[in-house]
Amino acid sequence: MLKIYGWKRSRAIRCIWTLEELGLDYEQVPLNPHAGETRTPEYLALNPSGKIPTLVHDDFVLTESIAINYYLASTFPGSLLPRDTRALARLQQWTSWAVTELEPPMVAIMREGRRSAEQIDQTRIANSHAEVHQTVDRILERHLAQQSQILPGSDFTLADLNVACVVNSMPMLGLDLTPHPQVAAWLQRCLARPAWQRAQEKSA
Image 1 (spheres, rainbow, N blue to C red):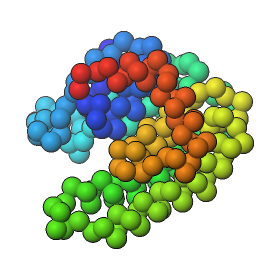
Image 2 (image 1 turned 180 degrees about the horizontal axis):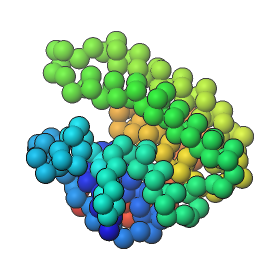
Image 3 (image 1 turned 30 degrees about the vertical axis):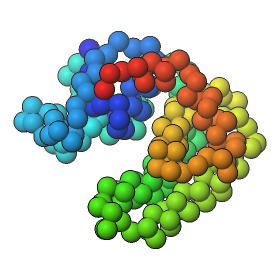
Image 4 (image 1 turned 180 degrees about the vertical axis):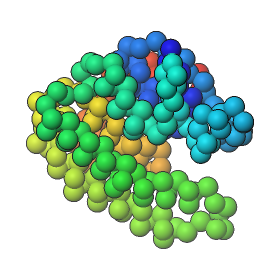
């Protein structure tokens, strides 16, 4: 029995996409953190941080979206994980890059945008925009100019999925992908996958 807690407008979408790619049967519990649904005693017993997502697989409970994705891809083998140890290391490298280098300035933009109009620091937003564009151009755009997917010789792996989930948030934050044509084309290919489309059809 697989159960994923979290609505699709959060990092839980990474795990829902992975579940769909693997063709697994699962139950989604679409908790809304803004409505206090992650602060109930029942949910806090699963995830004391009160955050989403949380995966429950029979009697095993796991939090953090990247850890959940790796667990799913390794527990239910498919094409998402390469067999070669060096390719696996590259997968971890790209995933770490996405969540430690690319995502933080994007989170800063999002948090700044939640402030009232008179409190928003436009300079901070502009600096974060510049940082995101520079990071994408220097690393991902250059890499994809040499090959069509994240990992050499691969069609689509967990590396593509994890990185795509972060990059896909750029337009939502006003970060135009036009300056990064290779990234834009790669992301379009990723989001055209049937599993992503099924994940988007979730009600919440």
